[in-house]
Image (cartoon, rainbow, N blue to C red; front, side):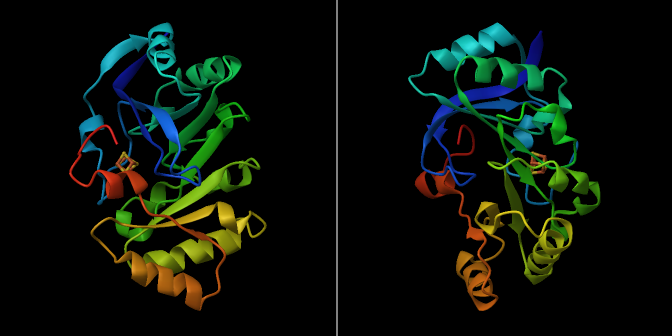
Length: 214
Ligand code: SF4
């Protein structure tokens, strides 16, 4: 059993409500989307085939019990849920970052899923699998990457219509890096009295010049 792996690295979690925690990242190769703001284009094709045991050994070399499986789109590879299961069985806290276009119910319920819902300006909003919003577990998170007012309105409307009871503090509104000032998005959230979480990509604040491994 193997997976095509783009990179494995130890860094600071920056894409969820777990932001700030040290974390081992496994970035898998391949993505079925092409978002306008994508910052991991290098993961579309580059990668090496690794046995699951080899991946687990690489993870075990770090003194850290939090692992995030990311991409690209990790669920494109059929063995990804097996890797997640094995890590959970080994006592790791496991997170999955997914672009929201593929069914998340294949993944072990103990895994914390960060599910993107693509907004219109990404160019990929027609690929969202809205059924995923009915598959969310109590620890899962939903993320909207927002570039302008149209995206913001779309995010509000999507959550209101599809899962009004999902805890707002687990909904992340994240400004597109270089696309909208975080202060603008913050003002909109406050004006509308939303209880969603303004989310900044912490790793990009810490290491603004790094292009990989963050
Ligand atoms: S889903 Fe993620 S990796 Fe794929 S194109 Fe969009 S931003 Fe890039």
